[in-house]
Image (cartoon, rainbow over all chains, first blue to last red; front, top):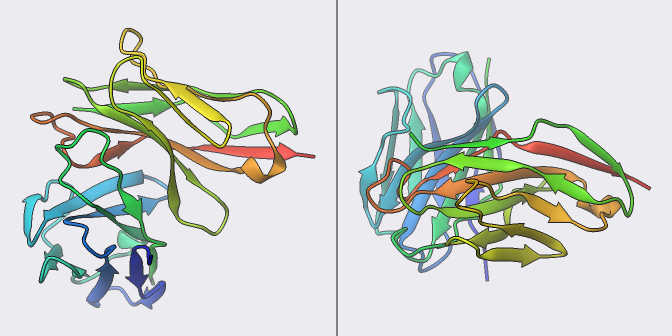
Length: 117
Length: 116
């Protein structure tokens, strides 16, 4: 079946503009995660959704970052007033069950490469 | 908080050489441990996992054993191939009540290059 998909695959924007990144999880997966991969910081957790609610937003780096999930499926990560340090690859992952099941696997999408000029 | 430390790379090997990539972790409780691989131009893929002490995860000739006494999850392969060239990430997911519950905490990644 289809894996996790993300769009756009690449995004170039100017500093100060807002961007929206989209994630379509694997059908039926209840949990959804956003991560960021950058040269300086490696792979960092941003936010986790269980259904439409976000029990863990601890990784969002500032209030310019927000995310929502509707219908227990698609999620959008929004970055307002982008800065150059926001340049990174934004990865989305989903898992079938909540993480309280030991070893529950997260499946990753191909990522959105964001470049802020 | 929870953390993962991987051996620094890059690692360069000849085909059929033995591979070890060290990974140690700090976590409360009983985390689940993972190795993910990122091939050139591709996304992160789960390579193997282990959910409790002394479990051995294995896949594609790679193995890693969950050692609680040494808080380690070292990745090994007896004979690497050129096609194993990739970036390898060790990760943990904390148990309920810990700071990494739900999310994956990753090591910094190890670049492996295998020459013919």
